[in-house]
Length: 343
Ligand code: TLP
View (tube, rainbow, N blue to C red):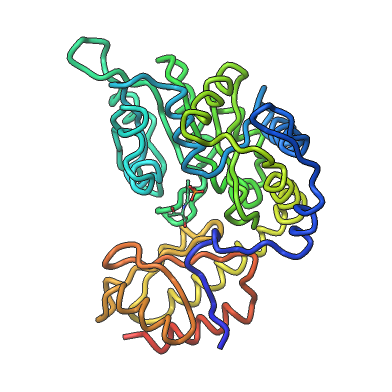
């Protein structure tokens, strides 16, 4: 029985064509800045984001963490949303690596309210940590792949500018936001001082992320990438996969979004499962199981026995993510299996 793996879009495997592009990649020593394929990818990211400079890094976590380090000093504070990836899933690294504390603020659908953010900015008084960064996530993973409305990003940008605080976007899935909203990566990136992008999620590359920003910011990020042991040598093999992924797997993300929507609407009609359809804007579906007599973990276990994998996000929430390997038949089969688990 084929397993339908909806746990994450990070599970996508490189296709034969992508592997061919990797095998044929021209490479050099990237720590010397001499890998032509990495340089080509960084140029491509500069062009896509409209930023002065870009840097290829090993993961989304590394991209966020070197960005936090480059923008802050130990003792500073970073404002983020309460379900943000940097707060929940990066192993406490803002504290461990940059010596900063996070100031999480709850925002419905992952969207921070600009007035609340303004109120949370610390006065310059020796009692307080200094607010040195505002961080947003687009799309917002734990809220269900929600897209940050441009108007809200602009409001936050005005606050950041007013207080001269850098503004960072975790754009691990900015590709999805761009395809679904019709707003370009460049337009989103224009609103922030730095942005991270992942190649290893919906785009289907095996490894890698990038950060983009001003030349000065990228110089600092480069220094921290080295400090974190993230300097890679013939990394062009990986950059080739990323370049292939941008060219071939970017626009097709709309198919993943369509399938997520079909899945969400069908599951929402099954007794014992509730989905806030407003959150289903891209490729992530969060299923509320509080009305089901089984726990989220029990449902995930039963799904697995029936050839479908999802993740229990909390005792009452399950996440399903559509991606490159998920077909229409997989969605139909998943809906059938979910029906067996209704109340
Ligand atoms: N997210 C993973 C898990 O860590 C939860 C997933 O399966 O979705 N920012 C965002 C918004 C992310 O969703 C992720 C990965 C990252 C950063 C980190 O990327 P990696 O895993 O490359 O370090």
